Amino acid sequence: MAAATPTSYTDKIVKTDEVAEFSPEIIDEMNMHVAKYPLERKRSALIPLLMLVQRERGWIDNPGVNFLARFLDLEVTDVWETATFYSMFNLRPVGRHHIQICKTLSCRIMGEPDITEHVCSRLGIHPGETTADGKFTVSMVECLGSCGTAPMMQIGFDYHEDLTIDKNDKRRDHQRTL
Ligand code: FES
Image (cartoon, rainbow, N blue to C red; front, side, top):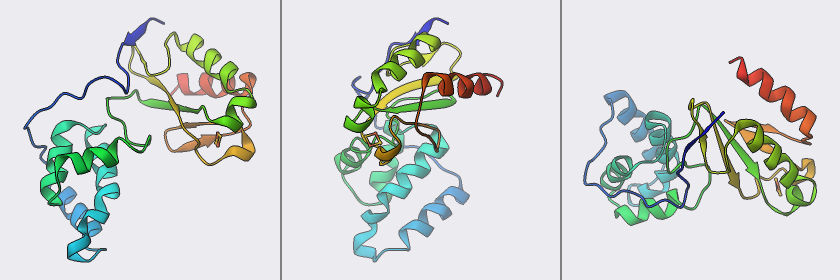
């Protein structure tokens, strides 16, 4: 399969004044999170609201960030500094299956480089890229807190641990059918 989007997390974020719009139901959901905190500390709801923006828009884009800055009375840079700190926030569109491979020490010494090379070569992409059919994105991330079962990766919200190349192939063949 041919490599697709030559984008990466280090690509420049396109700045725009556009502000995202959300349905009344989503606004209610956002307000529910904001209500968990004292009014003067409503910025504490930023992370769950970023998760909502990502769920609704597929990634954290500039209009979504502009919306959150207005909604929480923050500077746009306040929102970006949180969104860019956590690898769970996608700063560009990702494939239907987002494969996040841990590249930190425990995983690295337990075989991460072989796993990464194998996954990427089977998909025909490099880390940070998405397959042409939009199904798979591979990202390299910092420790996901599962060092005792290294090497590991996260696909969507699921952890896959004690990885071997054989285990990975079985999982991938299953996902091909989804
Ligand atoms: S080093 Fe990979 S999960 Fe911690």
